[in-house]
Image (cartoon, rainbow, N blue to C red; front, side, top):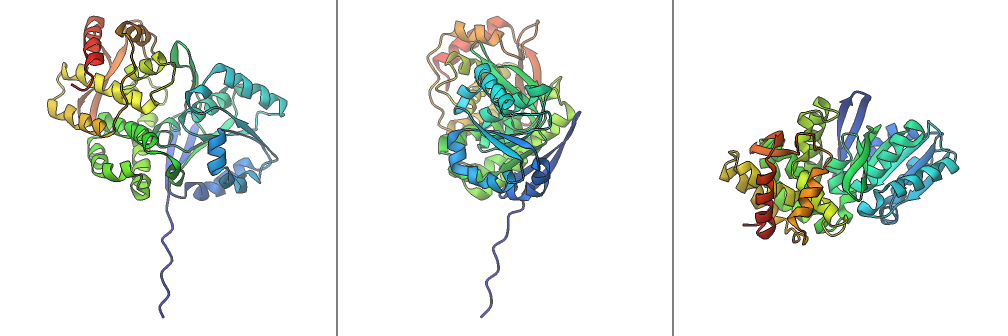
Length: 373
């Protein structure tokens, strides 16, 4: 009787991201953690390791790290709150002090094991502790795997503005195992997909079309679709980060939707809307400004149709004046005004577009009244 063939083993993709500090290895796809173990074990061996994570992520996936952590001389688990509540100076100080008390050294290691907020906080703490220690990003959400963990941006929030205190600190590696995405609910999955479509819409038209074709499977959480989309989205971001590592120009395109999105998050006290949902509303608003500057109706409708499928929650009740004040505090603002990222066509965008404040105010009032006109 013929033997049944063994099931095909997953083959995660590897992508080097070159930056001024060296190279970050990106390992992406199903089975990425196991595939990266040969590199991670020597990096951890004999070092004191700090694992920044949340109780929920640790309960779901912490056991998978044990074979790696066995190589460390000591392991300190530093648990933080879920979501944006983790990204405060108070939480950063609490972690710094815990690391000092635990005997952290310049050659200690940090693992940021969780979603985008854990990655932002963990990366910021690594960037600033003893003037910088090496870290690895282990993103467990779709948003973090396609975007937040890649590129070296780290930050915490202030009540007045999101991501307003931070540093560029590229990780030693990013290990994005798409098997971890199986524990996400549909809302979290949709919020992560927003970032993938965002990047393709302003940087890679053919890839936007490929994501459109994958959309039913992505929305359903199909493992094969996710294992395809995560490396493809990460590759878009890695390419633009290599060309512009500190966001002096083209990398600003990745902020499409974030200008109003961050203002909406700050206005709501970082509660209510998920980050991807706020970015989606921000993209819809930016499309209105872009239409005034020549973006075709057909190009705008392609993105609008995708975002409508995501069943966005309602906009929070907020006055236009409040949002206009918050827009002026945006970290991308310059003395000349807020520089908007606006699409020109599917796959092409412009950054640093200064829109007259009167136009922004008028369009914003209409948008808040009828956002899905």
